Amino acid sequence: MASGINVRLLDHTSDPIRSLYVAYRTAYSALRPQTIFDRIESEKITREQMLEFVEKRLETGHASPLEQVWFEFAIAGVSRAFSHQFVRHHIGISFEQQSQRYVAFKKGEFPYTVPETVRRAGFAPKMEEAFDRLGELYQEMIDAGIPAEDARFLIPNAANTNFKVVVNFLELLHICDLRLCTRAQWEFRQVASQMRAQIHRRFPELAKYIQPKCGDLRWGYCDESLEDWQACPIGKKRPHKKLLFELFDAQRRGALAPLAEGDFEIIEQVGSSIATTGSAKGGVGAPPVIAPNGDHSAEGTPTTRDEG
Ligand SMILES: Cc1cc2nc3c(=O)[nH]c(=O)nc-3n(C[C@H](O)[C@H](O)[C@H](O)COP(=O)(O)OP(=O)(O)OC[C@H]3O[C@@H](n4cnc5c(N)ncnc54)[C@H](O)[C@@H]3O)c2cc1C
Image (cartoon, rainbow, N blue to C red):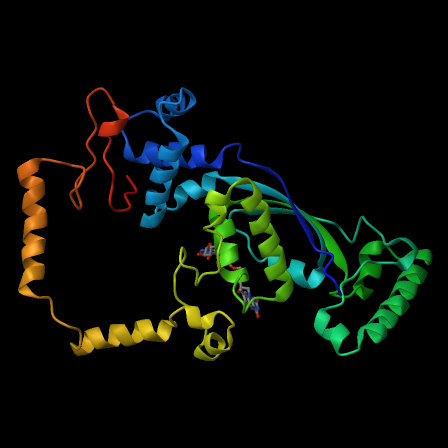
């Protein structure tokens, strides 16, 4: 049946890009976060500069600032089959779910989802009939004084439920790594897709990172089984992990092309150019340099993750 799933972004960190920028700059600069924040407010630092800096940092795998950006969602019309999976995610996410103890179904009528495969195979009427019978028995039990928390033992996985959820950006990316994968259950893929679409409406610059794990901005390869990769409708766009293993194996067997003399010259020159120019900006591995006046333009650009 047409999905009754509805996801709405209710609230969020007021300015996620600013929040990420202040967090990253705090890590990589001598400036106090207060000063960094004031510079943003006084427009000394533009949105473009913030975005550029944040995007560079995101390439390094320094992910902890993403924990400081949160999104609040209302999610309605999902099945209990979905909710069992959803609540398995427990780091960086907080749930409130409609209770089947405190909310008794009136007249034994509970909303439910009939999967498309069931409908297409012609089983929907039988399923609906079974649910009607369960609803009647549920009501009989409630009328007989059985508490809703026990009468609900009759309620199937198809019964609908609602959530209010707060999730940080790091966890949302992780959830979508797994649940936007075509291997994930269809309902979870639809919820994750709607979460992504909601964020895209407000923050397209962040939404682009919300991808399945094989996405170009995520791992870029598929770690599922070879059969699943072959069966995936977008599988051929990505290398399978087996290819990476073959590369690893080739390296172990000494089958990789050796580095040439020219490569060694590059290695040598990169180091010496830093030493002779004293520039901290262009050199690989150069430490951040901060001007005595704390000038933003003189702040170093770290090239690797640094947990400080
Ligand atoms: C396609 C698919 C099929 C699945 N099938 C089944 C199944 O058949 N049966 C089943 O029971 N479950 C199944 N699961 C659920 C799965 O095993 C996980 O419970 C679920 O994906 C959430 O786990 P998470 O570690 O990603 O949790 P999150 O809370 O999202 O964790 C985020 C990250 O935090 C870290 N983390 C989380 N918990 C811990 C911890 N305790 N200690 C240290 N680090 C931690 C991990 O790095 C993790 O990736 C399935 C999931 C998927 C995507």
